[in-house]
Length: 307
Image (spheres, rainbow, N blue to C red):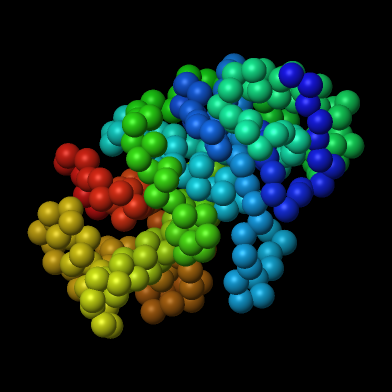
């Protein structure tokens, strides 16, 4: 298959983004007509059909790291994991291509994947077709695929549930800014956690995702008829859904003090040289949030689940 590429991101089209070997990915190809994920030992990338979304409140950002429709696809795989069985971690790279394909092109077609792989491996000779120029001059090669003198992809990503991914995928609305912000920070917390010296920042990213989940629960309660839902109402909603006996008076109250100390260098509890957090704060909160987003999107609760 002969491929041609846009030199700049179009308003709508196909977006191909490389994924770093620092991630932990499903072993098999995942995808459908509009989205696909491909990987082998040398290379992994996502293919997403996208269109520019309507802007809200004069929104503008120079730190956008992925398109909302990409984030929705990443999240469908990150959330679709069986509890206690490894992890699925997406670590997308700032290396993006925009192939020009017919509207009827199925993005999960193996012939397309092979053509893209051949093109990407010759990437250094195709730099004029990207919007990032010579990314190799600014990116640490340790995060690059082996075909670019980086690492091989390992057989991680255990616990991925393809049937659950299909269930989740169509429930994530890329125009829902609150949902995308919550899922985006959940995914980015994984990326940052791959570098131990930034584990504090990984937990801070989870705290943003936690607040987004809180607002999503309040929004759901309001839609179901609660006129002015409170943080206690949100806590009760989660406790009842997951059959937790705690009856907390604040949503995720157990993280309130650690969030305060982490976000405010000077606070009522003191002043510390580092945020007084535990490594388990990352792993426990991440798992809780994964289950809550899965429940809010699909109503799915795995046996023995619960924050």
